[in-house]
Image (cartoon, rainbow, N blue to C red; front, side, top):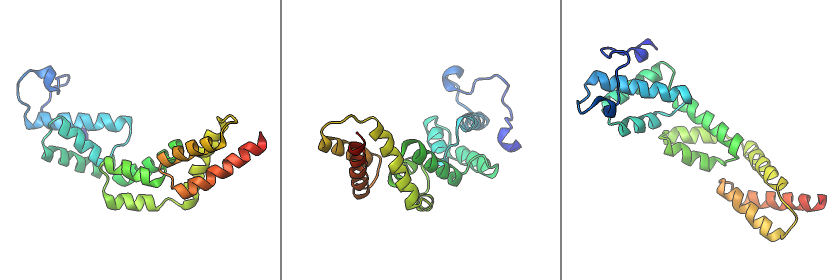
Length: 186
């Protein structure tokens, strides 16, 4: 942990951002300090994947060797863990947005997670928890329905669930059951 937080050769309060420093080129120590500051600032807000940090370093033109060295140090310090990140992301997206595993897998790929790790994390999702996420999402949406054209409502609900990544066969059965219950109650 201490190796990650050290900032050798950089004066406290000096700017690490090019636009605030003028045209002078950065030296290796300044790149290391900038990368460290960026990584720790990001990790203080939420956990990130190694791929996200690599992309952020590339955007700020931090040399690859410096970025990789810092990523390795953060990993050794347990501040960065792609497996933990992927599992937390999966759980959060299923719980808060009702997303299906295939949509979550796409998001994890976009975040630079290793395909083998994605497969492992997604395979941990049980069909019961996927079904539960679908039912919870559908229940929330059905609560806001008003009686009307049932076929139109069925198409709208089915489209909504499909955009969340749920399979058409499961979504169709769930939507028809939910609408049947909705119209029996009303």
